[in-house]
Image 1: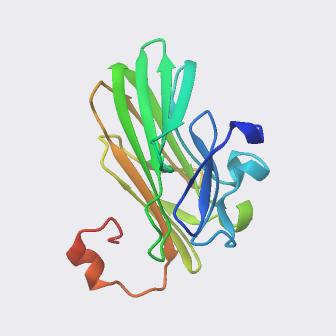
Image 2: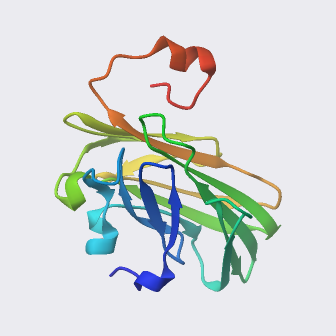
Image 3: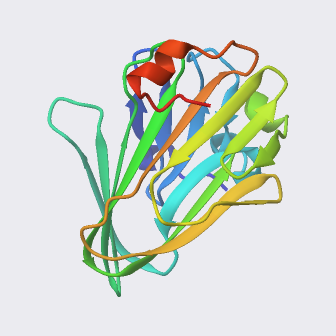
Length: 197
């Protein structure tokens, strides 16, 4: 069941937006434009309609969040019985391929974290072919890049992972949606951008 609408925060890239609830789940994202079919649409139903969750595994005792001044960079701080962790979410300006960045930082103690990526194109109607970090369906694909020590594994047409996060570690994850039939661009490789596939 989706959260109440007032529990969502928004991030955007000048062409589209994503909605993030208090549990650390991105429940809405249509890309590359705001009028495109949604790849995450849990807002309309449940997790099976698509979402990207990064959150503590155990009980969360307190959640606070704020935007960095004059930006759409959202920081959510989860406090648990074993420690505290920050999840920073943002979308860089759209260059034709919408991208979401999520940076997780251990603040205090050690927190067991979970990640669940369920991409469902066209508002949850289409289930893509899934490998660890890639979801492909027809002319659409979403590719995840991850710098954390967790091991991603495909499970039930989604991608799952978990890890124990000590203080001061900052693993980052990025998800980019693009047309899967586009030719590879050598300029993407030369610039070192996260779009390499």
